Image 1 (cartoon, rainbow, N blue to C red):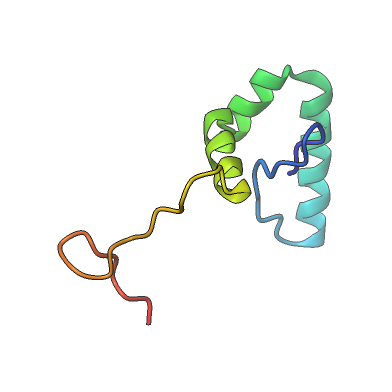
Image 2: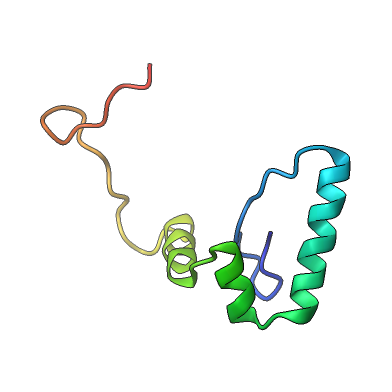
Length: 80
């Protein structure tokens, strides 16, 4: 889902088969028509604070990116 007001990515849900995707889309549209924004966000686990942090990261936020250490106790394990 993408927030219309600002184009921010909100939540991604695996829709499964075409039939399941159709049912899911119907459910989302029904909930958007009958719930408040806050109710919808709670129902889908959408956290606006996290949205702002992610968007700030994607926008660069005017700060240097945080880079994980490549060695030592706090290093991330190798993916390759």
